Amino acid sequence: MSTFSLQGYGDLLRAFAARDYRVADFHTANPAQRHLILRHDLDFSLEAVLPLAECEVALGWRATYFVLVRSEMYNIHTPAAVSVLRALQAQGHEIGLHLDASLYGADRVGLEQAASQECAWLEDTIGTAVRCLSFHRPAPSLLDDDKPLAGRVHAYQRRFFRDMGYCSDSRGQWGHGAPLDHRAVADGTALQLLTHPIWWAGSGTDDPVAVLDRFRDARDRALAQAIAANCEPYRGRAAKGE
Image 1: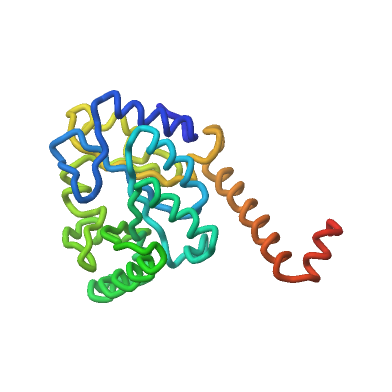
Image 2 (image 1 turned 60 degrees about the vertical axis):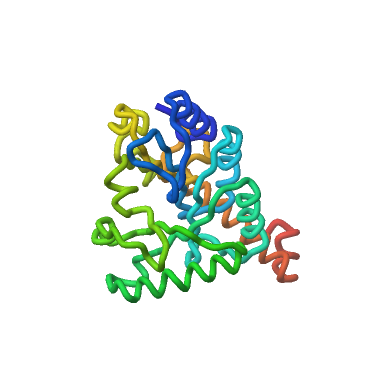
């Protein structure tokens, strides 16, 4: 089994390629063929995505990166975030909306409106149409909802979530079994592979809590630098090492 590291991610992709899989997306994947949907939900970090994106491009593959627009973890409108999103686009990857459905309750009409609004916000930032979305913290009912949302496909529609294999590294572990051991791979049929880039940013030896602690420490340092850049009294104190 591949370790949760950049090397491990590259090894995993090459193993799929060796099994004659080719990458498709949410618009072209055929459940009956050896199609691999590479899906990334960006729950915590934007900065962690670029090394994985480069691994994919090295194989001539492209992925779909789903971005939160309402999150305490990152702000898609900052110059650094925009730079990451533009780099993904330049490499040919697709950017979709990661919709935090828990913010809107179970009302389908309200969820449609929220999805439409959030897609518009994201489109304004990336300068191109958002054609697909995934759910963050979805209610169980959404996992059986086969209808498009806000006129866009979503990652839990039947053909992506039931008619083909599904494998996720949620919580930093393979909750549905290791990808290469999936029944779909044995049968030579399609698989939706969901990864969260933050789990792949380390050496492969850290547990998920250690990975998140390292992420939190990095965020704290970045916040301190931002405060120092915008507040002279704090900048002076930081310069003294206080």
